[in-house]
Length: 187
Length: 127
Image (cartoon, rainbow over all chains, first blue to last red; front, side, top):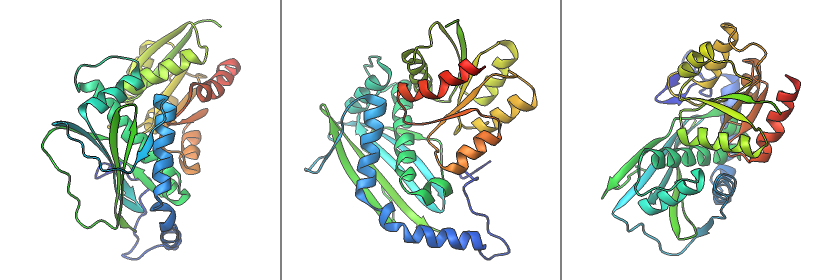
């Protein structure tokens, strides 16, 4: 069963308008883990792991001023639901997306076609899973939505007042991409 | 090794290709692959094809991998055929759910060909 596109197995049920003992324990536990959840190193380690294992490349965090200047960009979003709600967002220019898909599949691409979009969606899915897997309470009690991929020109993503946000830029070869973790609620 | 007929169920065509490549790298050769983009498609395929191994994603739209697995068991499709779940979900609870639903193995994404080999070959040898 899905609720708002997110697996409900991980979603804690409210009973009689109050919270259960289990929920209270989980809430306390997750609140106590906020330092782990918002630790930038967790995201860096997740990106490194996914790119090393699935693409065979070493991605590195880039802290200089970077802006994706290509007119066409690719954005993948995987939602979190359950004790933590929010999203993992991957964004790159078209050429980086194509390069990533080439590394994943061993195929050549001239444009951002359905296979490239599919590959970028899966990368975002694995990043979201790897990131939440770093914190035991999140791994067990937060579900993932299926990926949504957006392509186009001249668009911005806006998130209103998240509880916390991690936004990092990485690169490998000549490709640059951004990964953002947005937490808009901790139950 | 004799021909290994394998059903790969994943809504991502890229992941199906990656799983197939990993199986080949793991030494499964000759390998005959059947691909399904959903649990429903996978069930239809099992009604018409005999397979030696099933690898399925969990997080899929419409019918997820766990429901696909329950349907295989309840409809007695592919009896005795090992099923390995491949997913980004890796908590103990998810592993337990998969095993209770009838999975024999579990591979967490991202994975290496070596991990696929370690999980799949013993199951094929035991089958």
